[in-house]
Amino acid sequence: MTDSHIDIGWESARATNLENWEDRVPLHEEAYAIGALDDPDHLTRVVRTDLAALAPFLPNASIAGLDVCHLQCHIGTDTLSLVRAGARVTGVDFSPGALSSAAKLAERLGLDASWVESDVLDARAAVDGDFDLVYTSIGTITWLPDLERWAAQVAGLLRAGGVFYIRDGHPSLYSLDENADGLQLRYPYFGNGQAQLWDEESTYAGDGKVAHSRTYQWAHPLSEIINSLIGAGLQILRLDEGRTLPWKFAPRMIEEADGFAWPESERDLVPCTYTIVALKAGK
Ligand SMILES: C[S@@+](CC[C@H](N)C(=O)[O-])C[C@H]1O[C@@H](n2cnc3c(N)ncnc32)[C@H](O)[C@@H]1O
Image (cartoon, rainbow, N blue to C red; front, side, top):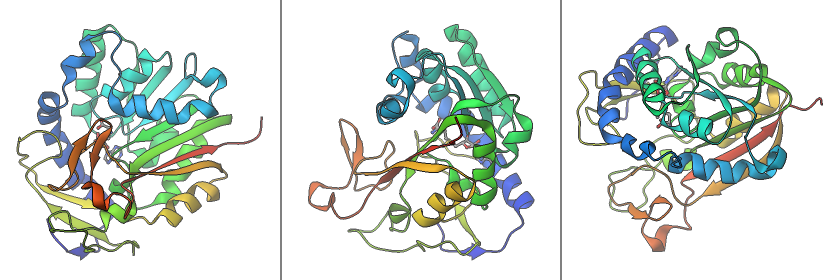
């Protein structure tokens, strides 16, 4: 953990983050309970939650038969859950190790998906075709300095009438000190373009340690996230804020049936996640 904010060029920050994400792949292959996917009916909890939130905005309340682009797909557990829900899915990630792990998992499970190695900020040019749904969830834009460029990729990947979905850690949550005894502000809510430097050997899943412990992340207030999507031409259909999240953000959090939460007396004080559904109009 660090409180440093620094000016760093994107290429250099990106290279540092990529080394870190490559190191996390074998650790997450162990920690993600991938074996659960051997049950042909199993979908990850993240995808089950997201499909329920998306249902009102989908034809027949389902992604069955839709073309879906999953940005920042990591080792493919969520991507392959989307395949199981009946979609044709392209997973995009900048980590060759993650994509290779995802492809192996797909083969083992007998599921079909396409995998594209690309920075999410270059995704439109890297991915063929356009999509009914662009999906990204849990652990996404904190890795990106430039939301205008990100939202332009999202809008470019959608066909007219297509829907964008994101759920992630709430920027208000990210401004809290995860190790404090109570809810205590520590990090800026408003980004100022500078990267936050983190130096952590551990990762959010399991007890393994990475060799490349530095990462750069960027704060994005909710207004910036929403306005980037509006600026790219999307219509906001829904904004929700949630009291639980799928990883243990702070040691004081308690595991509940639908994720990790603050102790009950604090649950109404601050949101843990936000969810946005947006439409590319025109059909
Ligand atoms: C926390 S995972 C999100 C996926 C999903 N929630 C999961 O846990 O499987 C974050 C992913 O973002 C990817 N990533 C980070 N920065 C990226 C970038 N600039 N372009 C593309 N992928 C990136 C990482 O390689 C990693 O696979």
